[in-house]
Image (cartoon, rainbow, N blue to C red; front, side, top):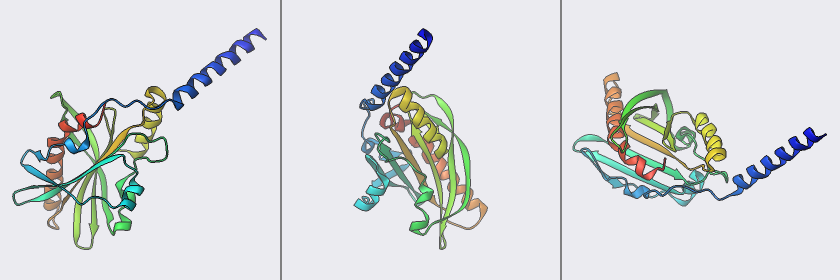
Length: 218
């Protein structure tokens, strides 16, 4: 009987502690606004894209976002979107960009992942794996790189991202995170044109990555 009472008491105390932890307001470390991401990335110069309409923002559910187009001479443009979620407890969560493509007329024709070597803010190199997709609408084709980034992690899988979100909610009482997407046109129909677009997008990501750490808290 005494053993049972002790076990019951421990479980009740643990449950009360977890409920207090889960209902406590999330504390996110200070970070810079997404708008402070550099407008110049290597040889690329960025300009702000069209603001999203209210109905689009309602679907995305982001707390903050940046939507830019970067150009470099006659090189095809690179588009950057970063959507930041301060909390994902109330139903506004990150989801794959592929969910929205059919409604905009785009179809995925090739899906995979690619490994990149990037440098963080401290100058240390690290490998990351991101999604690499080719999408098409009519005769237009785009190369797309995207990933989920939270608490210092770069994650390609949407499902793995959700698992880490739950884990960090219990461990750190934080569910903040971001979706990062880079696009660039594929200017021809040959495999070489596709490879060139992939290399262009990868080079842009490598130039941008050190600045992401300051706006996406670890």
